[in-house]
Length: 348
Picture 1 (cartoon, rainbow, N blue to C red):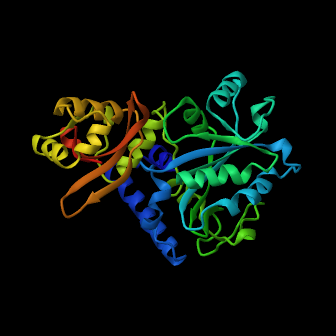
Picture 2: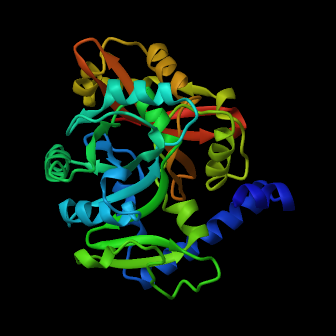
Picture 3: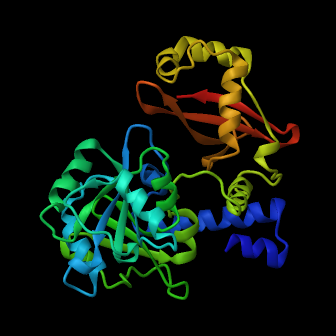
């Protein structure tokens, strides 16, 4: 919607920033009226370093129901931790290249049972983030008796399975404890709370809080991390517009790690740098690692720090290791558009 406002009405710069902030302020008011603090939703809206993400795959034809989505959620909701905050996305495994999808499933899926691949379109996925190791196993084991459950694909780290899944999953729910936040129609007032779907979400002790879909899709829908494809640049530009009226392509920026900050990282974050293989890296090498990621990553946790007059955002670094899973680090960067510079605030 913001892209339409920009292109149709010529909104840009400070004007667009003002519109985004007004919408965000209204979102906070709407949520607060529903006893939900926006800041408390963070763990379900941004990627985390020490939590898992996964998409759980179901054979829709094995549910015994034409309404396979509600049937699946009746099995899944009781298995979720009632204390956690998580985004839940859903979607059929769509795509013309059936062989590619078969290869992705074959190389990536942790199977619950054997099945014969016929058509990916009969497979339905439920994507859940912010999972502990124990929660992931509880879901997998708890779903195993369900005949329609095929298995899950780990999507914590970047893979072609994760990239493909990012193109098929649509935002559905944002779970905050026993409250499920979802979208309703834009012509329905935000004072209402309604489950407009056929999913019997309240059956398992959950409370539904809803708001207009424009607010949900812009501010409350989790984006699965993937490389920046054509068209994704617009998303990043509009995101930056939330903190600055001066928006420029990040690919033209230089990453700067000043000497004092480098010394701080060596002294205070040495263990993390060692795990990431950066303990012996000089400033230029660390800058290059971050620079390479800036052009191919989403930005999140955008903020303007009024007391310091600093505009900042985070990116997730995923660094390969020869001895196991990749290491993940968060880089917090100051956005300085006048100098086309991204200054490293910290790595953790």
